[in-house]
Length: 108
Figure 1 (cartoon, rainbow, N blue to C red):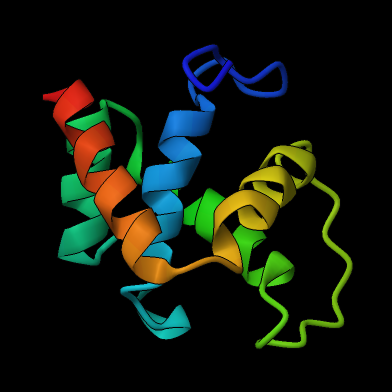
Figure 2: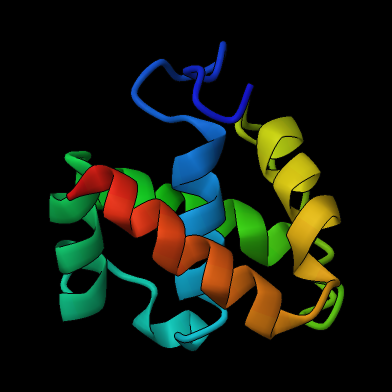
């Protein structure tokens, strides 16, 4: 099911979200913008828009318990992002990094 497009956004799959989550942990919130080279490179690799990568990162910021975001975000991406966060966000970051590296090969 990780290879199937999301119902809420057919341009994204859970694979995209896993790779973006890995990048999320490598950046600071202030650098999670379209102009950041890592975001542009990731979008190009996955053949999606940089805006989509930033949008997913914004949702992950709401999921992140360390940021203590009190804001309410209404987006159809919230549930898929929360699912990926629950699967990988609180786990060993090395495991996520290794998985993301393997998934990147899928897009090359």
